[in-house]
Amino acid sequence: MERKKSNLCVSVDVTKSSDFISVIDAVGPYAALIKTHIDVLDDFEPSVIDNLTSLSKKHDFLIFEDRKFADIGNTVELQYSSGIYKIANWSHITNAHPVPGPSVVTGLASVGLPLGRGLLLLAEMSTKDNLAVGEYTKSSVRMALDHPEFVIGFIAQNRMDGLATELGYAGKDLLILTPGVGLNSRGDGKGQKYRTPKEVVEEAGCDVIIVGRGVYGDGKNLDVADVRAKAKRYQSEGWLAYKNRLAL
Ligand code: S5P
Image (cartoon, rainbow, N blue to C red; front, side):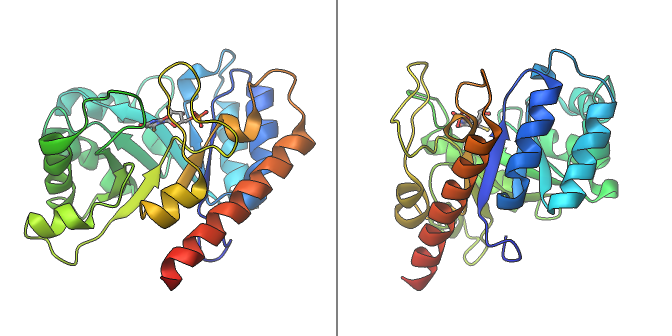
């Protein structure tokens, strides 16, 4: 983030591999992180991963497969390591729902730790009327801070350091990556809620903005120059908000 002056994570939820690679190549210079849902590609083949990995090196970004693991330890180990996608082989970061309890973290850690991977826990969500609130969020923070060797942060809508202090972990602070970010819209009509980079970073104290459709639009008739310009705009708005917060 510091090296690229970017706290932008671009979420690339398009369904054609050629669009996927074009968008990532266009936004790569502005993003610290690229977030994928590899299972939405209609025409996935292993060469997509080779291209993605090359772009990660070319543009100096990390890869975050947004897999949202949520099963028993044995199953998540298999889902993370095996199948068509073999996520652990190429994704630097992945995430999990805390709902199964700490065994989801230890199961994933048994695969990810030897590979130097990191995990994010979903402590809160961006959708209207979601259930990740109150005691659930608090337990998620406890689960993360009990596993500092593997859990590097949260998907959340707010800073979690207050809860950490309440739980007896004063001074322990992890990254907050925040989806539901858009400059031109407050929602998508399908439950998603948007806030601006200023609201998310300066006011709610989050670290990384996750932006999908705000950058690539509806995914139809992609205009790569426009996608690049939007990524540049979110990078500068996000970094300005981050610098403003650090100066507060
Ligand atoms: O609470 C959440 C958690 C996640 S990871 N809300 C979300 O929207 N996400 C993901 O962020 C979601 O799966 C999607 O890939 C991205 C938001 O996309 P956008 O197009 O709405 O910016």
